[in-house]
Picture 1 (tube, rainbow over the protein chains, first blue to last red):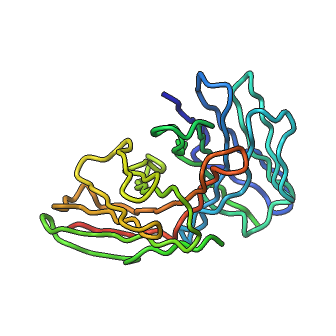
Picture 2: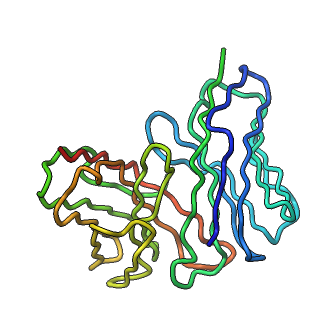
Length: 118
Length: 115
């Protein structure tokens, strides 16, 4: 079974600085998807970024980028120019590329709480 | 934002009572999911649906049942609520499989308290 581990329960960053959130996963599959979701105090789960395992290029969405190391099974999220609105829980998630049975479901890490200091 | 609504948004109930949570989508997506979120556990899958009347169990399905009679609605029922089912419940949807699909979009959540 696949597992997702976020080893940093809490992180803090100064406004306008850069912060990196860590995520590692365990799988025997070669093709899969990885996601970062943001959950602000409103509780809404918001997709931040998505990475396909078959793509070597790291995904980027504005100030958010990932460092995807497939061999190391590592998927970290880098937030550049941090803003007060980035304060939230961040969840890393894994999904198999196979939609058969339960394999299409998301497997989540336990989250990292990010605080942004003004 | 994906068109996903959940009702009710908040509910307080007593142990032993039945509870039904509703997820409604306007995106015509095939797949629908129910997760629960608890401190220290992240989100865990309860049940999911891969089509009308097609459902299956997830990681934490004990004490829950689901039904999907229409593409747009996915119901989660607690037959006899227990205090351990106090949680925040999220519904999610995704399109059919394929490299362009698979991203799950979440509803706003329902906070359920069982006294």
